[in-house]
Length: 488
RNA sequence: GUCUCCAUCGUCUAGCCCGGCCUAGGACAUCGGCCUUUCACGCCGACGACAGGGGUUCGAAUCCCCUUGGAGACGCCA
Image (tube, rainbow, N blue to C red; front, side, top):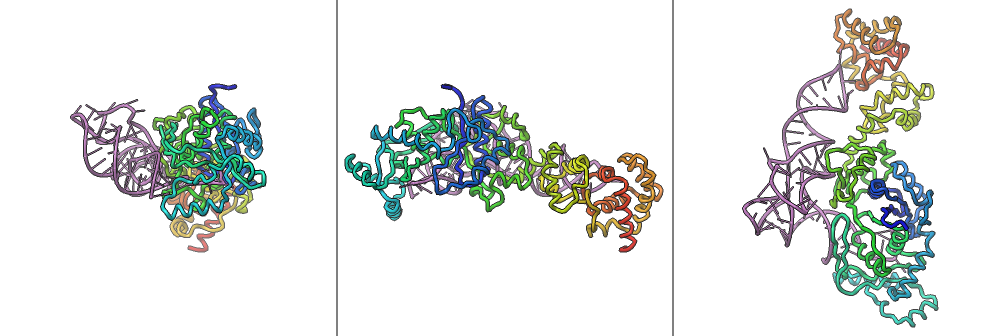
């Protein structure tokens, strides 16, 4: 037995994609485990067969891996406490339900979903919605119950909750939370289909898997008293339970797919870096206690402290995420970025295959500081692979003047004489031409930029010219000169 | 409706647990300016908050109560 070991889990339901709220929950568990030298395990809670989605599992795994949140026990990894998929643990839940049955702590309930539905409606009419199940089956005699079970009448197993008093527990983040028992009805533990409910399964699993701390979303606060009751019924010591605040969308409501991205993979597709998303998420409801914001996983992990987790819900501010992503982008490995960017270029029909990896990495380096998202590379920089087909009209009107044409022609004329094609030589060349023609560089450079790229903004001009190479620059400047000849 | 949780700049937050150092600090965004022969980065500055009301105290953003506002829960969903 590993007594005082920290063991935490992330236990998603495979009902859809992994949204950022879930990712944050996983992240905090992961950080806590890493920080304390504990174990972070993944458990799949698939006890609802009606909502199960096959693809979901893949998506959840992929999302976690992309973010670098690695589980050391769980599906794909194994471990001493498996299986880690609840639908493969049915016998275990049956066994523990039986224990409660033998102790008289549960009872079979034969109420149909229809009757329960009707009961709820009536209660609503009388404005007493709280209270839940009316406990009609609680006092059915053992004999009668057995008889009805034997004839095959469907039933669920309910926990006998106390009829008066209150239930309290110490939330790891909020402190004591006390709930009057009127809010806790007789919880269903086993469904008609033989599957356990979340409440039974998670309590049994957390105990069997020796989970020491449960960090979960705060939508579980109201259910925790049920779980406490269950731990008591089994005679088990509950783990430390802490509820993480929700993440809200900018309009104050729940984060949803409709209002932009909500799933981790959406953010990947939108051009965000995993390190940036992780960093950003870590700062939602937590902070290191000083002014640091840009932090590596290791720094975050070092500084991580459960006591600094806030109870206040926070709004997911995508603008700040973008800023943060830009910060990461600037220092990101160009080769790594290129792997994501190259397909985007290719998709736009750019002949990227004709260029060397070194060339392409340099293009990426040139753009890194001015892009906030990976996707922006795909939208810009086409001119590194293809001559501009047209010039930005507004810029052309401003830069492509008759006055600048001689300078462009001079550049075309003199490029061949540049022995060492680098930015220093080019600067010198341009200066010489400017002096010779009595023009300011401020007049010539923007025109060259437009000639070479077709647009008004972009990386440093001389860095670009150096990378583009002599032939390309000569060709494009000549083309611009011809354009002026024709259009001005 | 009932119960529970939450409440500092538009947003993320520091400070709150252990009242005075808070004329409330930082970051994003916004607006100015500087830098730059482009754009971006960077730098400087401005704007901007203790939800309201009562207490307790010599003193409250910090402790207590009420109000208001927000969120969540009230399933054979998790």
